[in-house]
Image (cartoon, rainbow, N blue to C red; front, side, top):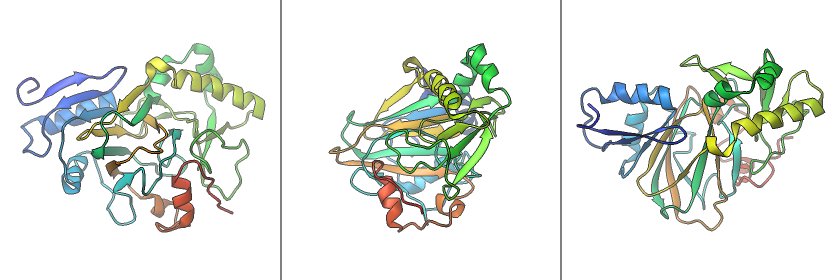
Length: 287
């Protein structure tokens, strides 16, 4: 039970830090408790871990189907794949029919405290929307698209047909918990469907102000051994500019039904366009 076999410490403004060694046999009751805390808090932090890739896969498998290592990035680094540029707010693969469900990153080699990843909570944002905004988006859909540039908001109101995109309600029911979730992002949401450009931009701006309010953001500064597991539907994330921040190697394991390359077969793992896109500041040329 907490206090004996492991410790639980809430994170402000959301999330839960759990004190336990995940490379040791897990105590009775821990696995179910971890899943319960995850559904409640959307983000779990474990410090001072030393997990091999297989061990991280074992932990993430408790949450659902884990993507295999073939055709999927299992390690990201500031001087390698996915580049070093900043990333504005997004949810991984929200522009596909089947976004990733859960993401995890384990810091295997970083400069303690140097880099950060920030998180915004769409479930909490949906709960706290002012009445006028809640009424303005009731029954409305949003168009979400693959961002050709990831470092800042450049997504166009009119998304070209060749760009991968999805239309979903602005507020979705979370697929696992059923909770109303504000499912829009600065990087990927092109427009509120059915509204003129000016009205759509104004409404999105007001929603972003609520979603990204400073006191509602959790910013995690990475230290060696940190493991973060987060809900990719309830939460979205951003990161700082990593230029010159080496080493920075994070071990990545995802819970999802399909990989990026299965959902978007027009791309290949060794496609130079993907390497350019991963640098965040460069434009992905699709046409």
